[in-house]
Amino acid sequence: MATITSVLEGKDTLTIMPTGGGKSLCYQIPALYSEGVVIVISPLISLMKDQVTGLKEHGIKACFLNSSQSASEKESVKSDIKSGHVNLVYVSPEGILSPGIYRFLQNFNISLIAIDEAHCVSQWGHEFRADYIRLGELKTIFPNVTMLALTATADEKTRGDISLQLGLNSPTIFVDSFDRPNIKYQILERADEIKQLDQFIKANHSGECGIVYCLSRKKVERVAEKLCQLGHNAVCYHAGLSTEVRERSQDLFNTEEDLIVVATIAFGMGIDRPDVRFVAHLDLPKSIEGYYQETGRAGRDGRPSNAWMVYGLQDVVKLSQMLETTQAIESYKKVARAKLDSMLCLCESVSCRRIFLLSYFGQKLDQDCGNCDSCLVPADTCDATEDAQKILSAIYRTNQIYGAGYIIDVLRGSKNAKVLERGHDQLSVFGIGKSRSKTYLGSILRQLLNQGFIRVKNWEYRNFCLTEKSKDLLSGAQKLEVRVQRVESKKSTKKTKSTRHIDTAHDNDDLFEELRSIRLELAKKASIPPYIIFSDKSLRDMCLLLPRDKTEFLMVNGVGQNKCDRYAESFLPKISEYL
Ligand code: ZN
Figure 1 (cartoon, rainbow, N blue to C red):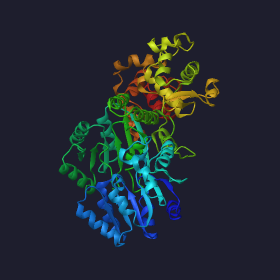
Figure 2: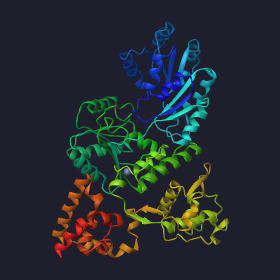
Figure 3: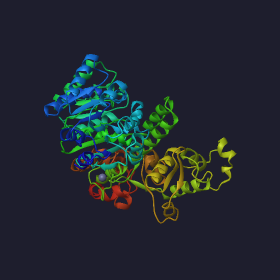
Figure 4: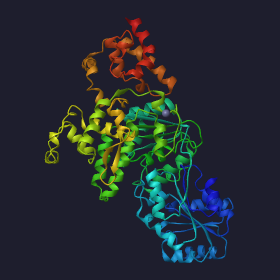
């Protein structure tokens, strides 16, 4: 492996490797093949003991030093190191910086310092830890020792920062492939989440093992209870439960075939069960890093697995509120807001989910993956070019120095003090987006950013400016397609007529049942839940409008060009039979 060669040659190295990619081999093999001792810095004190036991079985002489040990235990470890019986020492971040430990270690030939979970050193990382920031001092304490920084998730900005914070000496950077082709990604809008989850599990994962993540402890308990009532074998896991209960859940997880663990993100560190068949999220994760790490726990054995999520805009409100009420420093909040935005952008994107995820981690995929919901059932899209042009103009007219909130205020014609003070109510763009909701405009802004039509000018202020690509959109040479959100589609004028009558359409019950069974068949074939193909509302609308051809089919609520192309042929014959 390239990383191992690089550290054996004595080069500082930064390696980005997904969970389950064999990160630990990067320092275990050098520990076997080089003279001297390898120091591994890891924040996971609770796992050190297991790791050391595991290594000893493989003939690596390992030990650990951390705050959980008594003075006499530490002394005994130290004498082992002195006698030369140790290749590898695990130390916690605060441990390595305590003079008692580093002065002792300075007496030995240290061949390598490996820093695990290195993203914790960066404020740009999603798990910044105060005890990591001081690891920058290591280069002064051990000036001639090769350093290896390891992380499972780091976007480009974080990578640069890791290297800077740790003082790495022009490091060689390796990015291992992040792709997990056996995982199918699906992200849906939330309707009735328990029902959606129940249907998803029953249709795809009967008798199989999975993890369901929720944001709060309360919700974890509620969901586990509901799943049990619906006949699933579910237990819960969160940090507020007693050690006994948590250990029991963990044990069951390791032994029972069909167990579903409903958990907060506290569940996961050190999980290596290979046959977790699905990971479901009932709440939006705070960052793509988190999402990818959690979904990565599915299908370690390489067999087909599902990463399934429902989200709603209320998640965004909740997460934003949580963020704003924390005591965290402003710079941290800014990063956290940007991470949440990227996560949302993934949900709202109409393109292949895998391409989006991989490009977030700096990797390119040449073609659509064919194994995500966007590829399997292309989203209904609408042309948002005009709204996008309005946003670009507003950014330009306000001199490219403001953030999303302000731009949207100007577009919607808000007469707040700042807008009036700056005279922006006099601009031609003032109020031209009045008919659009804040949420909708925010979503278009995220897509513009994601697709490079605008960029962040200054991260401090998160303000936007135009790019080379903006011109193409402004001139109409390029279009911006966005996912039709349920909230917005109600407002679409084209469909108002059919929605108005929808609730009274219960006349054609026979036809409705027939259309439902067509839908079910299609769903089974594509192994997706039926409501992804069409909602009941769409089917009711078909019964009401009785479309005869594709043009009329397009008038049905919830049918866009994609769905029309894909499904019209399956439904139209049945409807014409009825006619
Ligand atoms: Zn795809």
